[in-house]
Amino acid sequence: MDVTALALALMELLGGPGTALVIAAEAVFPPVPGEVLLPFAGVSAAATGQSVLVPLAWTTAGSVLGGLAVYGVGRALGLRRTRALVRRLPLLEERDVDAAMRFFARWGFPAVALARFVPMVRTFISIPAGIERMPVWLFALATGLGSGIWNAVFVVAGYLFGQAGGELLEGFVRSYSAIVAVIGVLALVGFSLQRLRTRRDRPDAAPSASDAQPPQERQEPQEPPPPREPTPGREPGAPSTLEE
Image (cartoon, rainbow, N blue to C red; front, side, top):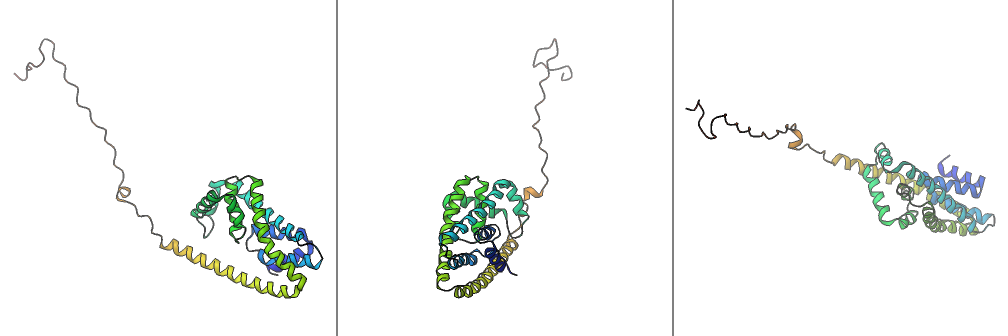
C-alpha cells in the first residue's frame, strides 16, 4: 500500500480527525501528498451532505498542528544545534540554514503565510520561525491564514467534483498523484546532482604562504646596556687607567 492509499484509508476511517492527522503529517513529512489528499476531503464532505466549511476547518487545523510541531523542533534546537544537525544530513549545508534565517528575518509573518503555498518550503519555514522564537499565536495565525487559502482551492474543487460525480475526480486525482510523485523524484534527483556538482567544483582552500610556514618566535627588542657609573675619585669623561 502506497502513502496515498494509506492516507486515504485513514481519512475514510477516522473522518475529520483523520483528515487533520494526515494533513499534519504532510506538514512534518513532506513526501505525504497533501495536494492529492485535499480534494478527497471535499469529495467526502459532498458525499455525506456536509458543508464545505467542515473539511476546510479540519484540513486547516491539521496544517497548523503540523506547522507547530516543526516550529517546536526549531525552537527546542536553536540555531547552534540546528547547524550541527544539518552538518550530519546529506545534501544539506549550513548555508541553507543561513538562507532560511535571512529569508525569515526579512519577511517574517508574510514568509510563514506565503510559504504554505509551496510544498517542502512550508515545512522548512517553520524551523527559522521557531529558532527566532516567533510568538506562537502569531505563527499559528500566519500558518492558518496561508493554509486556509491554499487548502480552500483544493477542498472546494473536490467538493464541486463530488457533487458532480466522485468517480471522475477519483480517476483524475490518482493520475495527478502519479504525476506529482514523478515530478518530486525528478526534482530530488536534480537537486542532488546540482548539490554534488557544486561540492565537487568548489576549490579547496589552499594554505597561504604565511600559513605554510611555521610562525617565527617574536623577538623582544633588546634594551641598551645601562651607562657605567664613574669610578669614585675620577671626574666623568676622564680617561680610565686602562685607556691611559
